[in-house]
Length: 360
Image (cartoon, rainbow, N blue to C red):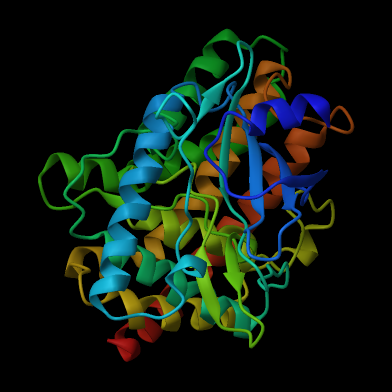
């Protein structure tokens, strides 16, 4: 605690620190709750930023600052109440920046949102809330004047992910290419269609927007009555296609099986989750979406299992150098599960198109 106390002392906070305890089970950053003694002083959240993943901390924090400032301004213009719970608030360090570097690690402090919670549940009700929240998040940022940087370059760039796979195949480092030829052929058969977003962007038909790029049910805070307060975990907020937020949620949320399910009979695309999320998303996002974005939402639903299939397969071919594995074929099992999900999405495409048309 002594070390953490000295880190917190570099930030401009109110109140006397009583204790600092680990908070949540995030996979990327180390997070702590800083509790204060005084009843009228707020509590805080201290985070160690994962510098291995987010290598440009200056850009990361500039992005977050631009986004939270713009959202706060929008909420004020709408006359919203309780704004402190509806947008994240970061505190400056004694350097004037919203992070502090202790020589090894980068740290930041934000306000702890009281009487709020997250949910892990993915059912139609929460999927609808997620659709509304993430659509609203994009809508509020559709006119942001700041130019944001890419905190993880090429994160959702399909052309880049295919290049990584093709490089892996050419090197065949673990001698596994021969056994996965079927999946490589299936991936290549779809490659041109799946790189459609980058192509449309180059042709000037598809804009990049400010997107969350990590849309999960547990990246929203709810109040005591079950209403969404705000979207959290803003590290991956960056320019992307709206397909990122739409497709990424459905890849995990609408999968009836596990990401690494060995029994492929479990893995299908859940249309109830799709309909609930899409209904919510279109309600809040259609104010700014272009026809080309709306008509390609089924493509977005297919793009993310495809992209993840490509990434797992590339890692398997490389000899499992990126994703943690529990057993030697783990990345191949993940590849097969994502491919099965992709096939299920493809089967449901006409139904998805029909549903989207009914929402518009």
